[in-house]
Image 1 (spheres, rainbow, N blue to C red):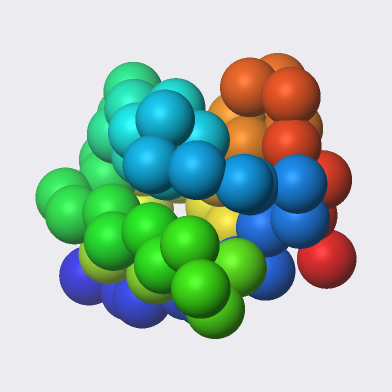
Image 2 (image 1 turned 180 degrees about the vertical axis):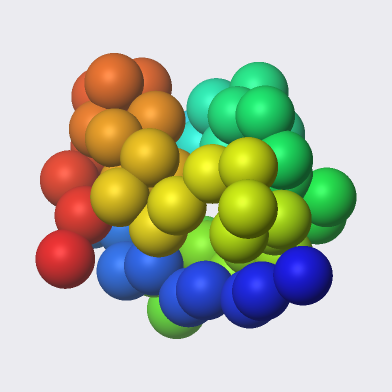
Length: 68
């Protein structure tokens, strides 16, 4: 398992947190996703033989948010 922290821009409320969490958890290989509205970050635990940080970032972007 690997852990990545992704900076997520554009979240303004708990609904945004839910959307980002759902997008991340929909990626194959993701075990856990913790999204922090105040810190504008998502910490994701995932199986790095199944998915990649780039795939996680793409899922967040596909949900309508910007990543750094």
